Image (cartoon, rainbow, N blue to C red; front, side, top):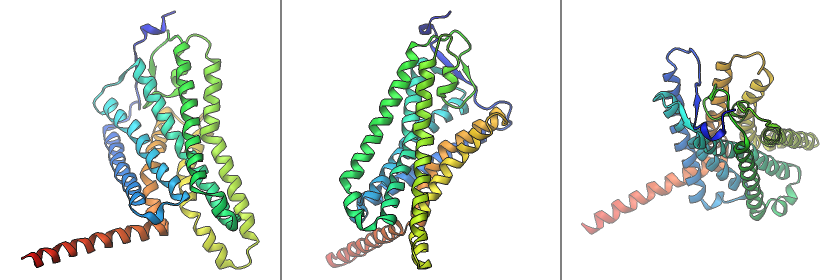
Length: 319
């Protein structure tokens, strides 16, 4: 058996036998740039407009931050690995890459849980909203999510130091995939597998079940509202969040459901798009579908125009 400390590199082969694949990596990099600009803009808007400093937009700010960091953890490394053919990843760097990828990307579904709870209380228990969904509550909830996911990710990655790798160090993925690297081990990886299952439940199944439960109750609450206009108005406040849920979960559900029937390239393309598209689309969804954000953008642009006019007037007076 080859000792694990002699395995100094992991090689990622990525997509196999697809012509002109370099254009896809350039496309991913373009998506990354749009994601960085969009999420930065959302964060700046929330910081500048005091009316958006509500519990809901604390979660939106955290979503933009997690998307920004998560995209930065994945895309530049993927671009460097495949576009410039740097396919050998140092052993320790592989685990560092894995930690940041799973930590940041896991925050998106947990953020969706926070936003689902916000919508549940706002629509089903509107009189209790100011008491139950406070700034302190939302800060505490998001901080607990970060603490939980960082702790689990650290434990999961640390367990790899107990594994020995004597087989091939080639993984068919675009990043250091937890499951694929784990399967290269020669010794027993049962504990690592259990932690990986817990991580997948925490990242995928728990958030999805909680969100579906919230909207089932919201649907039940809205069914008791007599006026159709009131139902539509209340449901419109959920459209941006539901769109985010669909964009994040549907591709992953497709991949997991058909994993045994799809080829490796299709799986990798679907997984890579699932990692980069939601962070790119989230800012546009909130800007285009959320009235408060649109009003805030218009107000900030108006203030900027007024300041320019004031500066021009002052310059004319000084002359």
